[in-house]
Length: 377
Image (tube, rainbow, N blue to C red; front, side, top):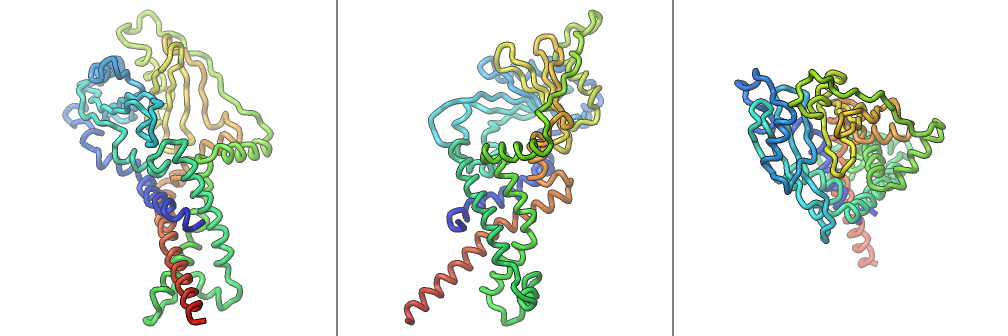
């Protein structure tokens, strides 16, 4: 199991280190197209409809705008996306979309700040290496999931092998006791065992939360068990529809303008508001109200033509299984504990990436030793 999963576990560990701090890294690296100039920030922002039209003009009718990410920060650009699914034959993750592009618009001038082919943006590539090894979901996810399952089994069997059988063995299980004459093999063995022990709990959580994404049967099993404990069926908050704007409201503003105004008033402390535009006729407009902790985010569905609220789903309205599914992202990235949690996940991911290397070295030396003994006999 260790040999079969070693390379994949190493890749998952290294990419996991990067993804743990992706929300902190991206605004620093992409500051030039994430933020607007200071001299412009005092002006009033353009209307939603004006900015949407600017994005539509850039891509043209052949690539309709699919979504927009609006940070609840006057210093940030609006991030428009255009994407379309594809059933193109191929094995790579980019074969799943005909196109996936991003455009950053200055909300004060409606001018394009930056655009890119988002499919090959660095952090998205890192994400999909972690998610599916850059392969299509139906190919990559089972491979990643199987390697993760092996990793979980190896952690449990590794703890069994690590467990000290007496007081003398216990002395060298918790800390490094190297001397000048301690050899590289012993040092490698201690690194594998001691760091593996201290990262065990977090690494196990990372593995189990990863399995929830990788295998639907595991996800459904976890939800069923939790729902049986709670004995509650899935629930969804149904709220009173928002009335259409009165006649004296500026008719030049779109339904999206009024929806954005309403959610900003209702959720002024949210981190961002994501609009996912209907891809089909009579499909609803989905608005994702994002908070720093992902599980606290809210999904609201609106009638795309008149702006009536259809339903609103928040964390408290979910049953135990759905809550666990909502918490999975924050647990996996460590963001549920804020920056300290992300640091813990970063270190655990780094150690997890080292375990296949140190473990292989232990296995190789033992195999080499056995071969040498066989020749002597």
